[in-house]
Length: 220
Image (cartoon, rainbow, N blue to C red; front, side, top):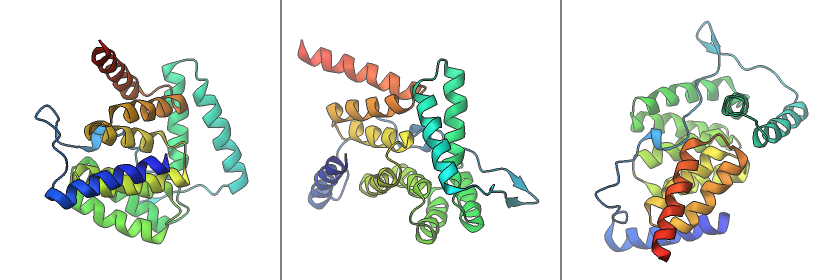
């Protein structure tokens, strides 16, 4: 996966060097928005205006996360998958820093308001304060995507997946960019990876169906 991300970055960089614009996406492609990516989890529970983060033993939390991933892959119903996925997302959100949590909450509100510049200001600080926090990189990847800066988005997606390889939101984001740039075979593979981790991803399932139909049509 890392090799392909770097290869895609090389192709995109070459295009930018030649024309200073991203590759033509076609009139049928809508402008990027936060809604293209997996819906972002809400801010963590707050009390008195301060973000509350429950203390947890790292080893216990890691073991719990592993069990949740296993349960998610074997979820028997969409409702069950949604509940388990939500638990995983809340763990992703835990940075261990009150300051980072507040910045993430503010960035999340800015993203949902489509104020990309403000969100980027917050997230630039987040990744500096806590470079090992995967969700900080994932959020910033979303903002770069909203700004149609696919190169920077890919870099942050790569960092996210290096820290959390099973981050289905980052994988879905990568697949979306691959598809927008015309790498449909690679997008199909990436969407399938995301769906294998989280079988409740309706958007990924729909994208897979569309890409498979397109591939069948080309083969006729």
